[in-house]
Each structure stands twice: as structure tokens, then as C-alpha cells.
Length: 346
Ligand code: NAD
Ligand code: UFG
Image 1: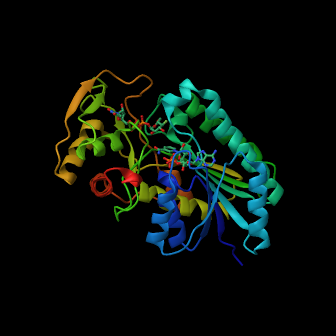
Image 2: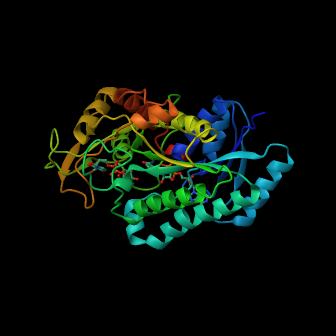
């Protein structure tokens, strides 16, 4: 009989919280482990409110092997051993990773090896990992396929590339280990209810939350980093995908981990379509009825002109493709931001 208990590390975060809802809807029972280093308890209260089921939560750190042992043992003794780990917990700010690389290697790489060791002790053999398109670095060819060379340009990106290598080597040691690394492109938007969304602490590093904060009056204007790229209008092009599509991709990946032929797979999750900064701003203005004041700025160091996915492998292996449009991403993102101007604190 299929056991459906999952450990979700970083489940109180932006992508993790949306994925919890998708997993619960698919019949899984997630246990969340989070240290609240970049999230707040209110998130899980809202996930429970939306799903109508209580969520088992452990406050703690993935680098705490004893805590992980206790958690896995308790679930096994309860008769609901963990079948698969969905591993979101990580630090994710590129600039911060340049300033403080050891914090990133410790949390993201060290945290993952600690987690895998505890999984080995508990005989938990499947893991789905949050990787990133950032592992590809400067594109040699677009769209990026999974065969594109790996060449990250900052410590954060290197932690993702290193963890992928660790997972590949770990899974190759037999005993039916399976690891699936999902290389996300640019997740944006929010749950269609407006109850869950992205709530960055301080000034947003990423484009979409910056736009929504301008729209709600928290920031004066958007700084557009570069209008001289070789793109449709000179601004940077990215493959934005709805966070609910991304959440569905994780449900498919958990299912796939249970039957994958290959011990390790790396799979792009994106739409396959590129959108420029100004195109996203226009789409958001349409969806929100707000005007987004913009000011042109020099390029942001380390940025590339364009990035978008070849999503064919995700369809072939997972039966997944992104369904939601840019318009929907903007409408849902605006619903969240306008109903929660101060994020989870408001
Ligand atoms: P997030 O910061 O909202 O979520 C991460 C969660 O992990 C937070 O709740 C944080 O408190 C928790 N956490 C961090 N370190 C921990 C530790 N040592 N122990 C326990 N909990 C810990 O980030 P997100 O946007 O939801 O991203 C989730 C994952 O996806 C991350 O691994 C991130 O690197 C990856 N990713 C994100 C994006 C993106 O654009 N958001 C793109 C590609 C990949
Ligand atoms: N941008 C602006 N103004 C802003 C923020 C961003 O013009 O205030 C532009 C960027 O220059 C880029 C585009 O908007 O052209 C998207 O930028 P994001 O920061 O939203 O996304 P990135 O693609 O740069 O970053 C994403 C993930 C990172 C990951 C990185 C590397 O958020 O975690 O991809 O590919 F490391």
C-alpha cells in the first residue's frame, strides 16, 4: 500500500507554502520542517485555513541531524514513515551569497548532506530538490535544455550546482535511492485566493515583488536594470511561471520519484516563453489598473540578457506543463499584494 507521508523542508516559505496546498489536494500528508529564518508562523496558519486540514509542523533546522533522526523515527513509529522529502529549505539571495558565501555553503550544501545522512539512517530513499536555472549561467544557447553546461556565476548558484552533484552521487549508491532536482525558472504570482503569496523581508531583490510593492504604494518607483540588452525592448527577458504551476510540478515530481528509472534526474520547470521587464510591467498595469512608475538604471552586475526554458523533459518525464498565463500571474499577484499590503505581518 502506498504511504503518503512527506517531509517538506522550508515548507513555510513562498514556494513551499503553495506546494503544501497542492500536495494536500493530491492526498499527501506533509510534515513541515522550517526554522523561520525567512518566513513566519502565520503562513502555515493560512495553509491550514485554505486546506481545512491540520499541518504537522516541527520548528528546527535541516542542519540538526538529531532533530531529523527524531522526526523520522517518530513518523515510522506512528505507522506513517516518510516516503519522500521535498527539500525547499535554503538561503536564496544572490547578493548576500557573494557577501557571505560560507553561510550559503553551510546552509544549502551542508544542510543537504546532513539531511541525506539522516534519510539514510531512517531509510528514506526519495528526495525532490529545489534547484534553479541559475546553475546554467551565461547561456550558450536558448532555450536552456538540461544538457546546457553548468556554470553558475555566484555562490548561491554554486550551492545549487553542488547539491545537484551530491544528489547524483548519493542516488547512484543504489538501494533504490531516487533524487529529482527541479530547475525552476522565475516563479511569480500568488495563490488565486489572495491568501498566500510572496512576502520578502526588506527591499525585494526580485522584479515581481518590487512591482507589486510599487503598485500598493510601498515603493516609489521601479528601477529597471538595463535598457540596452539585445532583447525585444532592451530590458532583460525571463521565463516567469505561476507559483501554482510550480507547486503542481512538485506533486508530479514526488510521484515520479516513486517510479523513476534513473536514480537522478534534473528537470527544468518553466513555460518556455520569455517576457521582458517592460512587458511584465505593462501586463501588471493591465491586471491591476495601477500605473507603475519606472526609472531606467544601469545593468545589475551579474545579470544576463535573456533566459528561458526548454520545458520538454518536464512534460516527457512528469507529464507537467505550465498552464497559467502572465495575465493570471499578475492578477493573482496583485490580489495577494492588495489584500495584504504588509505581507503576513499586516
Ligand atoms: P523562501 O525563503 O520563501 O523559503 C525557504 C524556507 O526555508 C523559508 O521558510 C526558510 O525559513 C526556510 N529555511 C531556510 N534555511 C533553513 C534551514 N537551515 N532549516 C530549516 N528551514 C530553513 O524561498 P522560496 O522562494 O520559497 O524558495 C524555495 C526554494 O526554491 C529554495 O531552495 C530556493 O533556493 C529555490 N528557488 C527559488 C527561486 C525563486 O525565485 N523564489 C528560484 C529558484 C530556486
Ligand atoms: N529587474 C529590474 N529591477 C528590479 C529587479 C529586477 O529591472 O528591481 C530585472 C532584472 O535585471 C532581470 C529581471 O528583472 O532582467 C528579473 O530579475 P529577478 O531578480 O526577478 O530574477 P533573476 O532572473 O535575476 O533571478 C532569478 C532568481 C534567483 C536566481 C537567478 C539566476 O530569483 O534566485 O534567477 O538566474 F539566482
